[in-house]
Length: 475
Image 1 (cartoon, rainbow, N blue to C red):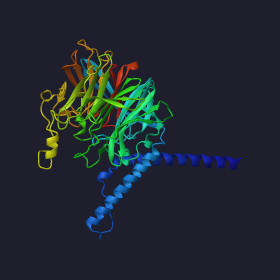
Image 2 (image 1 turned 135 degrees about the vertical axis):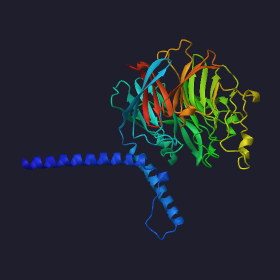
Image 3 (image 1 turned 60 degrees about the horizontal axis):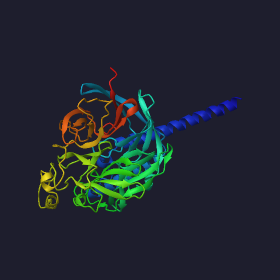
Image 4 (image 1 turned 90 degrees about the vertical axis):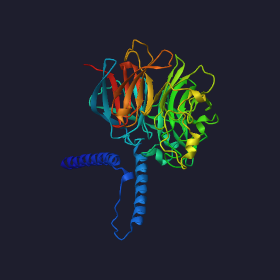
């Protein structure tokens, strides 16, 4: 009896020790990964006889090796996590049109692969029934039951996918500009837009689709454009940030999608390419049709079926962010002017080195004078426009009409209107903006969705890698 009890006790202690070892290793990995900025790490070697040039080469090799190891470990570990926990960090109060609102934020240390220099984490949201879907910028998918109480924390249960079959290049899984661009839950299917490597170092927008399943979703490619853009160098001849990628459902067979130009200055005005466009995608035959062109990087998209309009928020260059309206009863391809017309300017001054850019992109300070559509609104300086979504009259009733929207902003300068939620009202015909108010969040707003059952808006906020619940104040 004593021997049996002793063996049992030893077994239990061993199991407990193994569990804590696993738990510690797992959490240590993500903590180290979060705080170790490998791009800025200096690995000082002990060989004092080695000259500085040799040491620099060895350090660079060591850094690249560690980057590769972190990517490989990350890809392995992502399949081992069942729960992503978000802890409550704060609750803030706002007032819009004399309505008192609360924003409650829940942050996580797990989603720490930000897709912008200012972002701790990046993710996109959508809702099916009572479940909030979230996909991180590097492809981790989870869902949260919105019926569960939100006290000190919330938990997203992970869903496995085969996204890695379509994305094999390592930049996607690292802190970089490459990644997921949007998700859409539509007709019991999950749609994911992302930056695909069409061929070696040549990138293009793509969309995959999979039937909703809460264990694993098997994705299939339904769209890609063979007109890929070659990666030459960051921010001079190529930029993965300028990739658009917002998707919305139009009908059971059709998606609407924005595509960026990836810094290319020829494709946005070409009818032979889907880049720099607003397009319709036939879900069944994978073909697309151009609705509008002359776009640089539309990060916000809203389709109003009843009014037959599409609203796009557009990133300009240095200044010149826009809000554009596309009317579905227009039979011609609408043209918004990029890169010929823009109220923004080039970041680089004119020189012999940048002459080519000024010739291809003169950035005329008028659209109408050159045969293009004027934006309904432009922002100078830029605010970093992101998602735009209609405000339900149940949430904030405006007696002047129901053409009211939330527009998220990114950026990093509060004084310019960055890191905020903008309340915007249009006139009846969507020809002018009649009212604006800004809620300063001090957070980059990456995505916004509306949950009608409890009348609240849900945001993904990049600076704190958090999910924010915006609802009416209970006080």
